[in-house]
Image 1 (cartoon, helix red, strand yellow):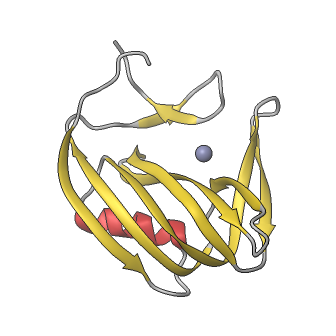
Image 2: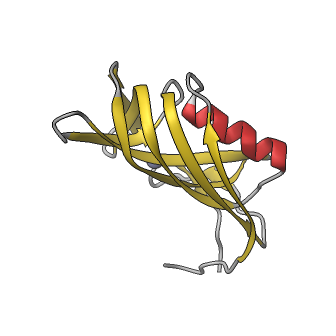
Length: 145
Ligand code: ZN
């Protein structure tokens, strides 16, 4: 880890997302409403359907996958930082079907909540800002020594 930043714990929120809401957009609007600029989060629950992505490292673009059925959220975690001056949620999700088979990836808008219990830990310290990274093609944290 190069030049990690140190943060102290801010507010911690425990809450539930409404059935039928968009998982990613709900997290994003919660952070914007509460003025959360840096945070980590985790959640569990279930979805009615999901949209996830896999990053093709060679071609530097996301391939999307639609799962149009109910799945358990085995795990979903990620972080919040700033992108274009706004709180931006980066999340990955692991989902399982009734046989326990799992699928997962980078969470996209269009994942619809059945139920979700969310734990958000705000972090206090220097702003963490995403900027385009040439090497990976991804918007990464700009952290310099
Ligand atoms: Zn990702």
